[in-house]
Length: 640
Image (cartoon, rainbow, N blue to C red; front, side, top):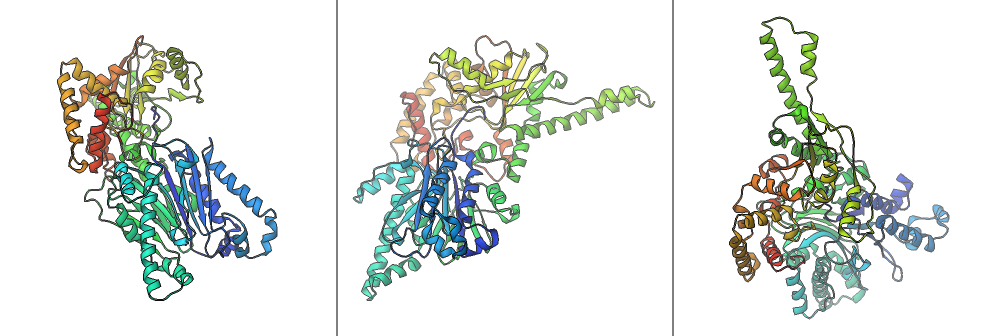
């Protein structure tokens, strides 16, 4: 993606189902769980580089011994440094680790941090709050009672976090943070306290002693009931995982399935991650054995070793999994995602042929590194297939023209040599920091983040087609890529996007919360002003304010009207105008994927609200209305 946008976080959960001695004997590793957690988090570093952390729970520790260990980091290499911190703590507490080789694993577990049965890890991209340890998952709510000790990490964004915040205030709490992760932690912890107290009172009435009750409560707590009750008021997209101090763990996915989660279980281990290849690679298991947690699904791993896959609430009638995961965010090493991205590229073929007037001989195709390369393979294959049909037609025409005579080698070769011209024209160079303050000089320096391959474009003769996976803000295209491509002298530059036009903000985890940042929105507003229809902008503004006065579950998306006045192609053409900077010689054209073709390529992941404005939850409509009001009132803030 040429435009850098932050996005979903990544989670990883490991529950070792055998005694720790089993893993030392089979794998020769006393810290098997910790090492696997490191691998799973590194395999998800694409999902978050603002911070990382992981927590471990030990089973069966005696009073006076620590049973929860947690390490977090917000350095430039947070995963590495979080685990370096953990290793340093292990060395400090167990300086002579070799001496434990002849001792039992129970002895090592009692003495060494992070030597436990249950692990929860998280990599963070922050869309709210600063990059501080306080904002880095996992979060922990500590208590001297194991059954009230709660650890939480998640990949989620709630649109109604303010309402949830004031619910806590109304019951007498004093939350010090309005981040959705903290609010979820406090809401769950409050319900956990309530259910603990209810069980305690009941057991005391039956005459049990306090130590007896502490042992009895974990078996009686119903985490499914707790999560179901607390989450009933949530509006957003989420996957979150939690661990209770006595050893139960859970993972839940939102009822629309917006955020992804996958799991694998055998007799040794239960693992959960945000992406399927993470599990396949980390544990060397086949694709067919890694399962997707369904919308409204819950994994409940009990202290006893039982694992229950269930529903904690009713799933949406029409789940809306995020299609941006398929286009860009998740790694393309997933078998299905790889094929979907290839399909996205292939489905652009017809529109791109029209854009270049079917002149393949004078067109060079390339991609913008690095995430568009799989889609580019799909486009290249589709272009080859088109060329094959042209070859057949040319050979048939030559056969007719030769009145049945055998074609010469030169005639056949002239047909077979017809191929699309594909090269890697755009090259991403080392990331450069900008120290210069003047905007003009800064833009010039930023332009050197990308480089180009010289000698492949025939000046003033060739059209250059560059494929990107999406065009969000268009900033990098305008300030950098198109300017350096223009230096090659093409007569035309066609920018192709394997994603449709991004018209609306996201509110479920992707950092696209401001209307004015979106190039498609800028184009629509500009066209309204150019055509003398400013009144529509004002009318939409008034309607959005009226919508915001209603409960969010009764709001509709008033911003759709901004786009209703123009065709898809008109907005694409005006985006090309906005991307063309003064002094460029080449004509610029932009071709976007259609929403219809997006759904053909990704039929099981129909979340398309950023393209269509059709939000899967009521809070989405409230967010888009708020985002437009913020734009009109020049408020450079998030809409949720």
